Length: 236
Image (tube, rainbow, N blue to C red; front, top):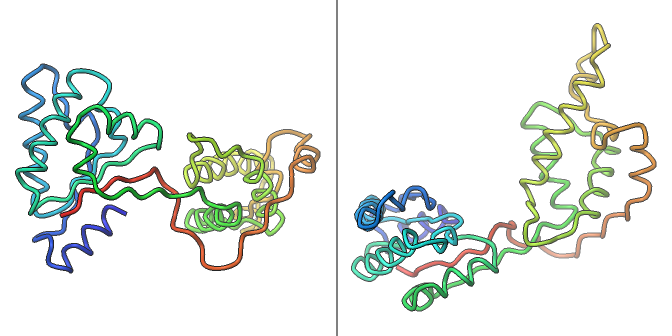
């Protein structure tokens, strides 16, 4: 999303370059007090004319070194407000705490975008797409099983959305390889097809899947924007 913002703002003439510089705490904070301000300002300088994206920004609220980075960032945002967009991202609760760490933060981030979790059907489509890109094909039965697994996942703050789908795929590929371990000459279909048994471990997998609630039908209408950590954006 930050990359899209960079391209849009460049097209509108609000940013000269429209490039994206992505960082996290480790790229802003130095090992000693006094060095962090310099390091942060150097990073900001590379983003001028574009977008600075700080992922898991609440990591800066952990100690005095992060606080120094926040103070420097606030000042640099004001000094370069006509040539820099800053986007910070993270989970809702910690992001609220992050904004409260410095009086100047909340006033400088004028736009907050909260992305809802993917629906079960959207996760199923993401899983299927990831499988195809990895040269696998999930059978309709496997996709139905995946959707049941998705429906059973608690949508807590730490839910991984597409990352969770990727983890399920990685585990399914490993089980698929184990399932074919004794097949001397597997066919192309056997090598590519993911079955329901590949999604859940053990002989009790069918019984386990049967206990899961059926997926909730997707609501009608266009899909909501992709789920991701909430993003707070500084206007150019």
